[in-house]
Image (cartoon, rainbow, N blue to C red; front, side, top):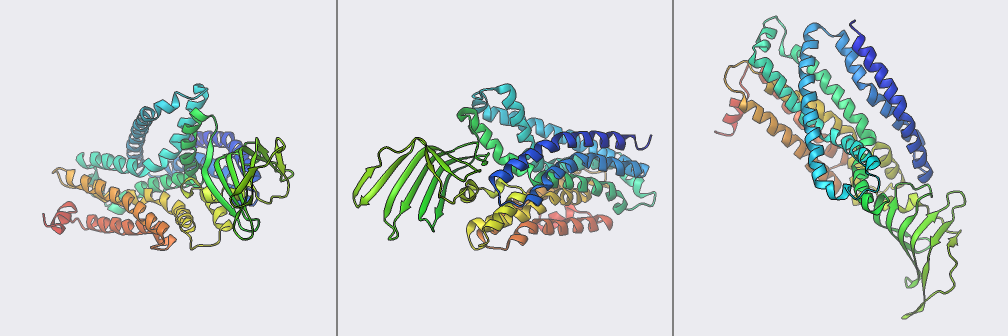
Length: 445
């Protein structure tokens, strides 16, 4: 049955999506409790991104079912090589990470529960990083095999050109870009930060979303210093190692309140300080600790919320599109370093997934060969170009963070530059001109 694979993957995708989506919906609800000013509609797309991610294989199977025999053959050969390469790299990455993190992983209180969670988080972030590399190697291998067996020549002699040969490869690149985008929407950036928090929690027992955060309230002249923020900002988990300095209108220190654990009641807006100590400064240099403080100390007239306090401590690298959008809306000033970093990362979330498609267009003309001689030169060129592409992505992003170039060019420049390189390589392959020899002449070797 021609559509059997599509039906099977569609059913499996729907089952997986409807199994995982409720967990993401619960995560969104908890997030909106801790961040009441967040864009609820945008965060509401997170469960749908999970469902869409689960349906990407079914989309590929649908195209495969409708494609011609030749397209299916090329698609299948490349997909098998890509899956083998991806599995091998993931296995190698997991083994290397296990060796590096073994000392932290063994401290987990419940390893049977901790290890599956940790490696599910690890793989979620790793897949996005590895996709450009694995599709590059998979393409070079599959096209190399087809070239060595003279199947590429037989294909072109039927009257079909190189563009026709590229069609199933481009489809695979688009599917991988969609996979990367749905992961990059929230899961992969969040997993990158949560992995580090899990490693710390193996010994401490509590995951931290941010640490050593300062927040200044100029209206009430309060300076907060928070040692650690939990991932749950709904009020169920405490802020740790909190120190609050209050100043007089002339700028002199008025008091300093310390507490090892502080919780926020989202129903009443009260701040609850556990084991508090408060230093009162009557006149410089006279200072004394306030006596008979209640345990716990409850303050009801402070307008700060955990979502406001954590803004300066959030890392754009660990936020998806909805989280970065919330931060940019709450911090409209675009002249600060943090704002430029968040804006560059926001546009990069949209640009990064399409590096998979650009990699396909780069590797295809270099992987196709009509000559009998060795192909080591073109393979080396493909690897070097892909490495340069990923290097340029980091460099342009750093320029965007520093404000040297605007955020949108910083995020999309790599895609545009290497897309032009790929189109130039495809044009030379269409005209039958050698690629590796031309590059050697350009460098004078």
